Image 1 (cartoon, rainbow, N blue to C red):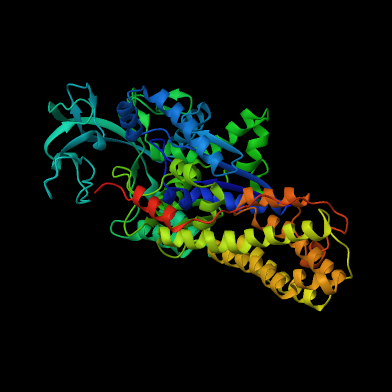
Image 2: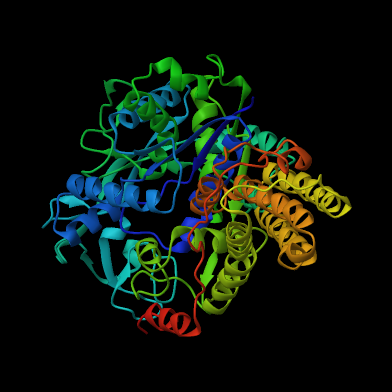
Length: 570
């Protein structure tokens, strides 16, 4: 039994995520977690909400809530949506937890002891009205490039030009609107990750099985231009993890917090500790996943993320772990994804363009979305959600192929043989041919799931479903029944045994439908070791029930209504 540690990039707290966010990390991570559990492996699947930084404070202010209350409320919302999409986290933590406070401060102390933290004096905008330094995003003004009056101090969203706060014309505080701003000196801590460049380079070179997308982004950050740069790890903010050197105060860092990019990945470790706390476990129970001196040397650690998160996970977080000098587990494989675009453009929160997680669940069950997203996951390039494609995929794959197969054979059996599997003679050449084809497909499916080639796995699963339909068409038990009811019974027994086989293989993709199939067939969820034994698992006389329609088709009118509803405002 293998031990698999899985983390999904933690979603930011400031609002509900769209389908592109979902398919870029959490959903494929869940697929892999479910598959490994089904194969009998020990899995620890961790995610959390990313709660610190400027956007959390701004979102809380907009909602009229204290930031701590806002984060608590949004964590509850995101947790509920994760459950709605059947994301099977072992724990869904919070980066604001006391566990993350302690671990972040611990890592900072170890990095300082190793000479990898430098104190830097820099200049920053200070608002006299607000009585505080303003991070770049807290400063708004007119863009010097395009003239937009709502540019931020780090970037103009209209023309996308990267900016410094001092570039803005007529700058103002995003908190109070005050223009009483001045440039002041402030001291911050920098992680000297540039000193670890060669070590990081060699480590990445050793990962010969990583996706090209992952390694190419990492190498670009390592070598392009000036190469890997040191990064600030503190901010002048109220909300965050207070800067400490381990458990000790850090002179000159009073009132400052750690920068969100530094503490967020540490939450993967802290989230596992939170899992232990929540389940009455000891520190040894979570440390065996993370400390190579305490049992983690045999763990395979896999991370899932969108391509924008790759630099932090290939460079900055590994630099934190390596630099600590302690035996923490480094990631073994990083599965990164391109972007999912929406119907000829991009998802946009501000314009209400695209489908967000809460909206998706209010329209259709989670399996519909899971199947489309995972079978169209943006692995090798960006992919695009269109309503035509979504309708076609749901109607053809789920309703016509899988759902129709289950419905036809269970209803026919009930009408002719009652609600139990009929006997009939042994399987013949027709059944053996399907078993052989299924065995080939099963082996390919398992290979693609192991290597996280998700689109290829979905194609194999679809092909496995199709084999059953083709068999049923050729066997035609409804025609055989009149002349040779015994032969019809054999065909029926074989087809009914396909249902739990389909259910177990489909569960990582469409867990609710899988549960419906297993419940209807009164069958256990056992991964098939080989197709032949799986297709004889349910004997004659085994009772079953006819499930309700598993997948309703999406009509043209419904498709058009949804497309208009989520087009957004121009």
